[in-house]
Image (tube, rainbow, N blue to C red; front, side):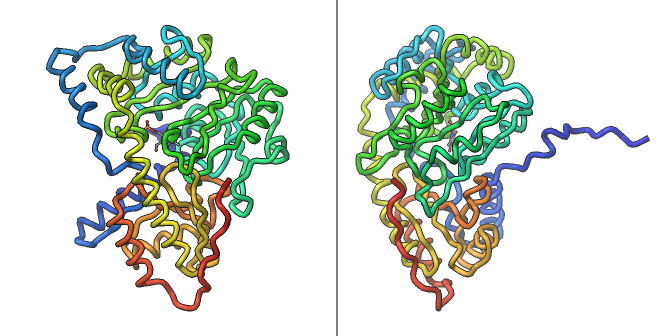
Length: 405
Ligand SMILES: Cc1ncc(COP(=O)(O)O)c(C=O)c1O
């Protein structure tokens, strides 16, 4: 008799995270003594602001080292409710409609777990973050990708959306600004989504983790604030990107109470609660000075220009200016260096520059690579120089496409 598999087929079928795989490769090469410019990950190079760190350290010193309410401390939930109302025009009751989680990633996972049954379909605008598909597959739900086209500025059209709706569609997942494209959803696209959700009675899951990283005054659209959407929208957000707090693992989900009531069960039976003193840090982030956020945005803006200009000087590379987030997502199809996976391998091998292949972000990502500019300008400039030094001659200089909006 064949031995029974020791691991679950459902999980075996899922690939390890592409971004973590790139990070592992970088570590290995550095161990071998190679100089590597790591533009693979989405971890801001900034250190968390001092007053946030002080608040968490102070909380530890005061003995705030115990379990707290599964939904999060009342103080932090109040601050989040206030933030959502003043920044996003979203009204959520802190007592019953907000759950503080250890990371936005966990917020999203338990939100999907609480709302999707096996076989339910979720429309996912693509390219999109690598973990969406894996999370859906973990719970037996089915991603229906709507592949957006870089030639069209990754614009969402009603036809593309409608083609993806089936009798099993239960929800739509939208990330704005988007990782990896940097595209921010326009008001018109958001209204289209709202109309579709209403027509087919769909849930909307809005991942707004990059909300604070938007350039040139491009406005952020919160789906839950659109007319008719508050009762069907689950808002995901967190502290990692806005406040450079990736290592803290702190996020939240806000949704109508019948949904958070189920989400909180998944939280209670998995992690229990987010860290007590971590939440004290989160409270300081929201309640404290916000100039730390704008200072980082100014710096990201300068890096955005540096990297996009540099990439467009490389033959066969076309890179649009992202509206938001801190990724450049150029099309590299005309560089003559293979598909995106081969290109990324070549770049790492020859130039020592680590990037993430676009196909890791689903349909629509092929032929592109993602370069993170959550790195200082010296690293970005050195990476560009290294790319230029090995770039094959004879490929026509990249054309600069219009911006993504
Ligand atoms: C689109 C998107 N959503 C959510 C997250 C998760 O953020 P957190 O660090 O809070 O888990 C990330 C992190 O890279 C992301 O890119």
